[in-house]
Amino acid sequence: MALQLLTHREGLGKLQQALSAVDAEIKTCSTCSNISLGDPCHICTDEGRDKTSLCVVEGVDDLWAMERSGAFKGYYHILGGVVSAIDGVGPEDLTIDQLVNRVKKGAFKEVILALGASVDGQTTAHLISRKLKPLGVDVSALARGIPIGAEVDYMDDGTLSLALKGRQVF
Image (cartoon, rainbow, N blue to C red; front, side, top):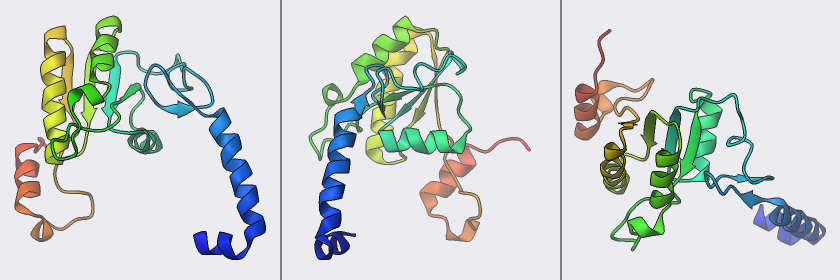
C-alpha cells in the first residue's frame, strides 16, 4: 500500500486529508475508553445492553473482536494494555482504578476478564480479580483450551492442561 501511494502521489494527499478528518472527529469514550464519534460511545449509551455484565479487554481491537462475535451483550472496559515488567507497564499505567470505581458505582454482577493467555495477561487478570472480589462481584475469565477445528495431537502441553482443567460436562 505504501509503494502504491508513493508511486501515485495524488492519492497521498487524499489519504492525508481523510486521516485528518478522522482525527478531528474521533473521540475516546470517557466511560470505557473505546473510540467513537461521540462521548460516551454508542456501546455505553445503548440502554438495551445487559447492565449486569462488564467485559474487561486489553484494547479497542479486542472490544471490536468481542462485538463481531455477537456473543456478549453487556458493557466493556478497556485497560489500555496489560501489566508488563519487561515493558515497564505497571498497574498505574492502565485504567484499573477507573475499572474499580466503575464497578463500585454500577450494578454489575459479573466482570469477565477477556485478557490474553500470556503471562502478562494472566498477571493482570489476577491483580484485577484481587481488587474486585471484595466488592462482591463475580469475576470470571474466558475459557482456555483447544480451539475449534484443532487436533489434540498438535496441541502444546500448556493448552492441553488448560483444556483438561476447564472441561465441561457434556
